[in-house]
Amino acid sequence: MNALDVIIGLIGFALTLMVFSYLLGDNFFFRAALYLLVGVSSGYIAAVLITKVILPLLIAPIQTNNGQFSLLTVVPLLLCLLLVLMLFPRTVSAGKLPLAFLVGVMAALTIAGVSRGTLAPQLLSIVNRFSPSLVQTSGQPAWGQILEAVFILLGVVAVLFTFHHRTHLKGDAEARSGLVEGLSSIGQVFIGITFGMLFVGFYTTALTALIAQLGTLKDFILSLITG
Image 1: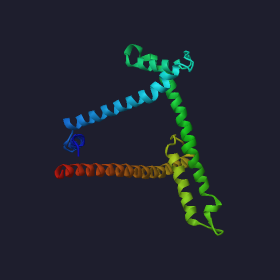
Image 2 (image 1 turned 135 degrees about the vertical axis):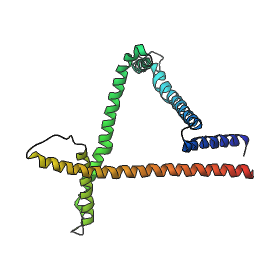
Image 3 (image 1 turned 180 degrees about the vertical axis):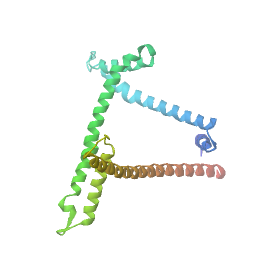
Image 4 (image 1 turned 90 degrees about the vertical axis):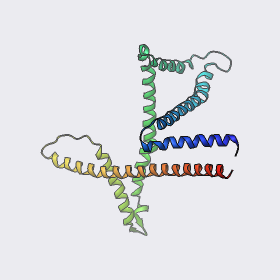
């Protein structure tokens, strides 16, 4: 093990101890490690944006291949300059136009992406669950597949009813409102199960990373002792 590896290993070991110090409460060492993480991440993201986005996609296209100035490519540059003006209190209103444009484009892309990549495939998957080729086996009903399809459909409908807008209804509509409330309660159960599974996934990922980091520290300490 060379000197550089030893220095990097000691820094990683020190930062790990600083993060683990949070178990004793909020302290200077934990905050220092947190600030260092935020600073390094911000610097890395800024460097990537400058080298991969701003220079090749914003600055370079300003001039065309024949060396002439392209007015069309100046529009993104002007929008970026207007966003920079938001850093100053007197010119903060100048950034409303590019910010609105950015939010509108992102909203359109998000809606299109969710509709085509998530909502439509899930709806088609639910419909395909009731396909005769899946709910029948040798001409006989496959009750397991049927119950699974009904359960999935019930979960989707119940979750959708969970987010309904409640209104105060009277008369004959009260029974219908009770049905909606019942479906909403079932939907809350499905949402709780989903959040629980997501938490388990996040916890498992974090635990795996912790075990890997502890294994790396163990190998580093053993290499120092034996080396």
